[in-house]
Length: 366
Image 1 (cartoon, helix red, strand yellow):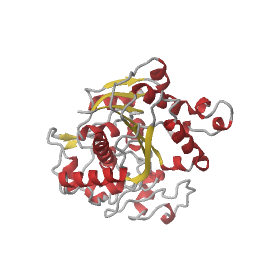
Image 2 (image 1 turned 90 degrees about the vertical axis):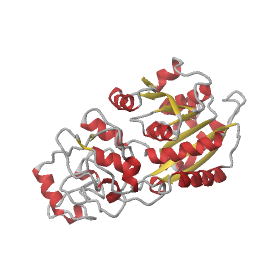
Image 3 (image 1 turned 30 degrees about the horizontal axis):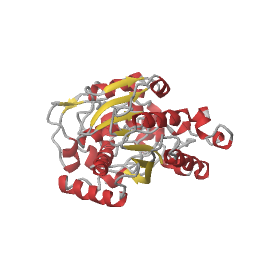
Image 4 (image 1 turned 30 degrees about the vertical axis):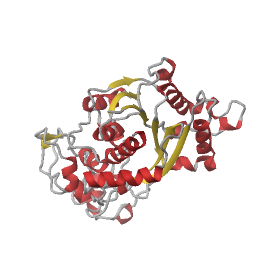
């Protein structure tokens, strides 16, 4: 069993997918204590370090050989090119401290492989200069004591991995000293393996496939565990629990409810009689049963946040419905405040996509 470390773990979407593929996630790092509680509840055997990555780096929380793989990626807000244009360089700019400490931990642990996930815009930030700097750093043997990482990157869409959501993300895979880097061949091999193991894994999935059997909401979010009605629901179904959690709806104001009731599937704020100024093009958008969702963000519980109104009910989607659309298993329980849980689910890596990436990494390491 290969060992992994999850940096910037959040609620554990990356970890969930890697565990589903058989990896042992031995350590995780998350700065937010409330979010870390969700991670710990669902991953009790992982050593969760609740701290800033700066402290994790400086205080030697990690050591060489701790893991075969490092997963996760620093938030893009930390990237800046100002430092790359001065004598201190990209790594010397304090605004890039998140990436700097991420790199330092990779350097310390020296995993055989790392998987770096980020927004797709990273490739084009500052006309591509930031990404070029990142590539240079991981290829610089002087910075890695004679080692280097062979890199492969791609913009991927979770919808192509059987997730009912159009969510594009940047994935960068680094392999220590360029061993076994026929990435295209490994990708096709992995795809074939997943299809043989789970025949419906890559099927196109809609919102209806994801949430159609969640027929009720409750104040405390606890509902009866319902038998699956299709292949996707079967994939997420858990026989361990008699209940499903996080299935409570938000309380909307009278004005918001009035607007919600006006909107038909596929429509948004432009269909309202009450003219509003919206900063989001999908504001007050109602989902369509037979389509995938747009990207689930941290504002999926807010009518003005995007196309997050339930396809047939006058409310935004619940946390459990958002988790289904993100491909979290039904026995994955989210804890914390409403705002925190929305952040946990909206910022997560879809576990089903992570599961594929984990299998791909396994093929690289074998």
